[in-house]
Image 1 (cartoon, rainbow, N blue to C red):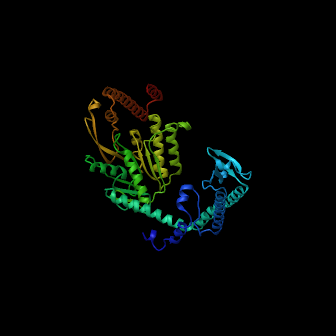
Image 2: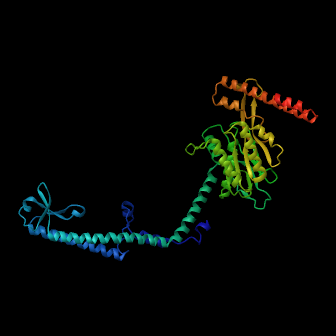
Image 3: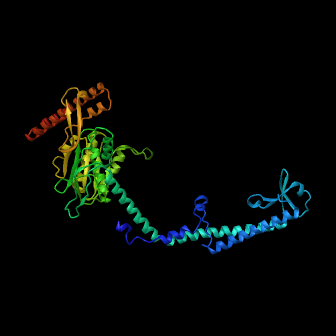
Length: 463
């Protein structure tokens, strides 16, 4: 607070009073012009006095004509450059001398001018023109005067903006209803570090908390997350569909942002080394106007990550490779995952449903397999429509054995007969793949045992 509003806070009270009294603020809002108050600008005051003098001359001339013609109903009419025409009753106007020139008429009246009225009006127009020129220059001078105080305004707005942010963060911390902690930054860590104990997603947890107050039987499950330090830097995340993988990754990214803007974070404890950039590859969408497919967009964003991420970055990649065939997608995901873990060596979350990918990197020291836990009933039942998955939304070590896609199909409303047909197809594909793998293993054993080339060629041909 002292840094915002202490002794260093600029005193702008005189400046504010100066501009408050400098011009008509209501007129400025309504008409978009700055009209200085009397006594502020001598040049403008002078030309305004000249305008008023010309108007008084015209009023004096009107009284003179009324007296001369003996009619108080004579008045000035007109608009714009046709102002100050004498509107005279027709009974009087028809008997006037040639000194009165007819301009227009309406029922019962004629509008007329004289050489003197025209001369007086021209003098008024000249005065008004000078007034408008000076008024525009007054606006320029007011803006220039305001600009000379730019350093003061900048200092004030910066401090008010900082206070606004701090106030917002304080209100969030006090009203979230979550366990909040002050994050601890580690600056001397040998390698990047991220350690979160009982972390919450701030938006989703607050929404669930509000629903619970309304009577809903829901709760948000906090999770511990460790990357770097004594743990691998890359987490390979698996788990059932709808099990919370994407939410966990988003949660970590949001907590890092909150920590680095100086906010308390919804967690029991949070330690981290500073993060220079956060890179995300989440979701799937194409760019039709640019002629870019979903997979092209995936790879373009992946290229940015591999090109620009440093060891101090945080990378979140959600199911890379799903936009193409399983074979190609798995291969690309494998190569990118190895590059993140072994070349970039940054803190990274990499979620996947490719279980072959998990097998391929199980011996990579810098990759930690983890999954979102669940409980499964009737898992080995021959009818997949009877399978039931309970999501625990807790992060556990190791690889999840299945993605439980048939349960996702069930809860999304796919018809049971379609799910059973899909399950049967899955069994056939799995059996075929297992058979091929068995033959590959046999081929390898035969080769190791010294089998002749002709026999090996025959075995390859049969595959």
